[in-house]
Amino acid sequence: MHYALCLVLFMVGLYGVLVKRNLIKIIVSLVVMESAVNLFIVMVGYRLKGIAPIMDSTIPPDQFVAASVDPIPQALVLTSIVIGVGVTAMTVAIAMRLYERYGTYDIQEIRRLRG
Amino acid sequence: MLDLLGIVILFTIVAAIVAIEMRDILGVVIAISAVGTGLIIAFFFMLAPDVAIVPIVVEVLTLVILVKATLRPELKTFVGNRDFFGLMVTVAMLLVVGILGMRVFDGLPRFGVPVFASAPNTPGMYYVTNGLRDTGAANIVSSVILDYRAYDTLGEATVLFTAVMGAIAIIRKTARKAPSEPEVSEWQD
Amino acid sequence: MAGLGHGGMTPVVRTTAGWMKGFILVFGLYIVAYGHLTPGGGFAGGVILALAFVMLVLAGGRERLPRILSLELVAELDSIGGLIFLGIAMLGMLPGLGGVFFNNFVVKSLHIGTPFHVVSAGIIPLCNISIAIKVASSLFLLFMLLILLRGVYTQEDTRA
Image (cartoon, rainbow over all chains, first blue to last red; front, side):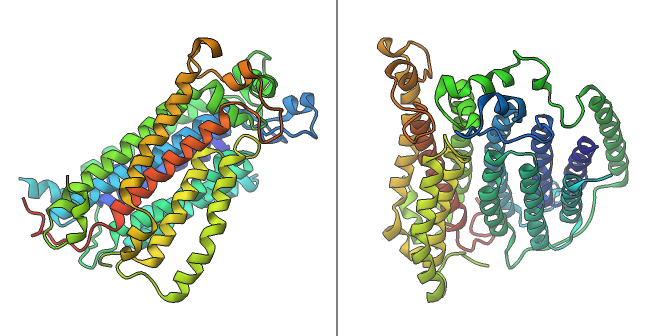
């Protein structure tokens, strides 16, 4: 049920990338798609009524092992979010440069002006 | 039927639809911040505080960069989608992705019973039981990204470095050409 | 909005930013330094440090940038942070300290530190600090170049 909601979010982002003409909306849809995938990966490692994977001196180790959530998806998503920042920065730089050159953010207009 | 987590994800979906369909460009940028906020709250529900801190601070940076890219006095706003045939192909592709995605979920375990709890020698179970003894770090996620899987962190630092250098290289060319900005002379080599 | 950052903001905003910079920097350093005991780590702390300096430049205006931080120094720090991270990784390969790339030599070979204290977990705090330096300087440089060093350009200025 919750997995299906993540898939709906991904499809909303995919619709934005494929259909919209404004370059800023395409960049924003890429951000939405990447957020949906990150959320799905963290969801796979969730344990009901669990605790976060941070040890304490007050929790005995056996109880911690029996109740913590999976730490590997969280490590992967940490990397993925930082890379998403880099990708967003680079696409925004390209979009600003395109606006300088053609005067518009419309991709069909840019294709027409390129000749 | 929908618990609190489902309501948060539904809010994120509604914010994403609003962001993609809005006409005002500034409204689009603000709606993306709403998507990021819903994502952060969902991460807190997933008991992942380490993962949730990074989008909080990254959202601020993304917001300011997007506002700078879109707020111009001469920006022409327009509405429109691509042509009709492209729209039909897109809807068909989305239906295929949706149906295949739902098939994938049958193979996954139920929500809340993770895969790593099924056997004692999966990597996740090994890291949780031996993390403190092998590395001495109380934060198991830190020990995963900086001791067990440190090579991936090296790759990530390289990718971030390259992306930022690429963005600077793209912007720097325009800064060099304009004759009316004397302050950029420190960046000419 | 031509040339975001020209002239800065009102004196109220500038004074408040001057008072807040200490708190934000200390908070960022806390998140970096305790990354192996509480949630946080190098990436989140590095972004917080970059945002503190960005706040100072946005509030004070572009003219105050040379007094706050020089951009060449920030570019050097970026590369130095990455090299320190790689250097710590290579140090694990020395024959006296284990012979494996990225070996946690402080815990495995030298045995320094006790768990749940600040001095523990070997190379993890050192890696956190070097990653924080690198991420902070990268994002500060990117922000400055995307926002400040571009005034109002019309199409005629950049036609090749």
